[in-house]
Picture 1: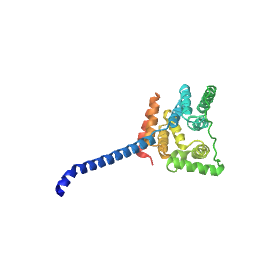
Picture 2: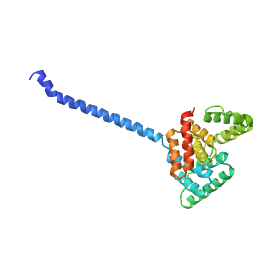
Picture 3: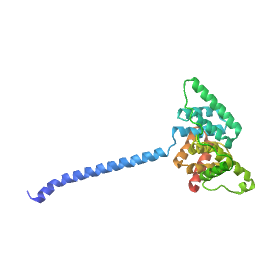
Length: 254
């Protein structure tokens, strides 16, 4: 048998081996791509705990107490601690007013009592641990937080017209409240967007906080999911406002 004959006999085997190797490599590539896509999809989705936050905020802002009761139970079931739920409702007084905050805290208090009577032992969660500065240091910290969340130093005609309002924002909202470390900034922005979406007439502030949500690390996919969560819970107007803000934010966030 000459060399040419042997090569002809071996050619089908060689081709089979090569094709198997290429198929194996392709399968590996497809598996790797699928794994990457799955990771990206997971990163683009809110956790069960996060999904409850904008609902709690929206129902608080619109004073829908039965829905708020359900959303608080949903959040606690999903791993939201009692102190995190308290913090959400306390923070939102700055956006919805003391009366709604106090009413919502009363609902949370009743929810935790009822759950305890049913034998559910909710995790209390941590209190703020980081010391909050006072005086000039508090305003400095608040100004730094405000700038990070806003993407630039906050200024404008209204702040020139009434400078004290920005001082209150810096010292109290972004100082006293946002410096409390028992709730992360992503959760705080999810709550703020949920509350503002449920409040007609504050579209400018909703857009500002949608941009802020992207700056603190929430993805566009997660914010689109927030829109869908509102829609799925029959909050069509709030979902529409949140979606419009997201569309605008995607083209303008710094």
